Length: 103
Image (cartoon, rainbow, N blue to C red):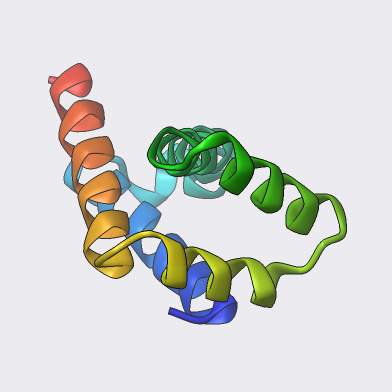
């Protein structure tokens, strides 16, 4: 996924997640998404760092610090096998945990 596709996917994911949790437009979905977005992004980054060795973590940190998002995406695709599936698993686990906690 390119960076823009990831952003669009993440927004759609959050919309669907809140819909699955039975929130409505009356619940001010944008504020809820703003609360969830950093938690989801933190989960993604934590999972990525957990997959990498120290040298790879340093490389990722350097790319992030220099705001080289496209290079970061390419680096992660080349470093983490089945990267798209890896991300989908993170999203799926986040959704499961969120909905479980909302029940």
